[in-house]
Image (cartoon, rainbow, N blue to C red; front, side):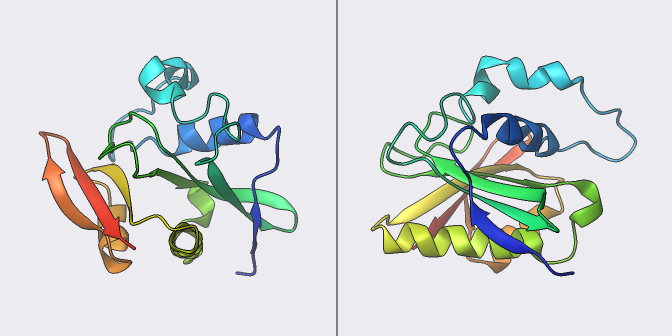
Amino acid sequence: MEYKIRTISEGEEGLLKDFLYEAIFVPPGTPPPPGSIIDQPELQVYVTGFGTKKDDIGFVAEIDDMPVGAVWVRIMNDYGHIDNDTPSFAISLYKDYRGFGIGTALMKEMLRILKNRGYKQASLAVQKANYAVRMYQKIGFEIVDENEEEYIMLCRL
């Protein structure tokens, strides 16, 4: 599957909202939550005003000029927050484009950019049942904490 990765453009907050919804892990056999779930303050930290802070970095994967996935980071007090020097990841792909290596490529590109910009580490939170846990571990993330539902993972750059 041929795709290209590009930087998220200013004004694409709506696109990030779409991918934020796609990032919500829905276990098999569970109905997806309503779209309004992303309006909750604990989820809005991922997208509100994205691009206005120096630590906001994002990429979109496209096939034939159509966005199919996105990865973005910012320093925020989210589920995967480690400290105020560690960017937290958000990543998702539309379901039809999962399993082709696009997510891995997005993650690796982001880790490369973060390292080049002098960041020492990056974090994320992921549901324990999410198949993506293995992908995160393969690219260098380690479980550093957990709660009942999620792992907090860290990648040292």
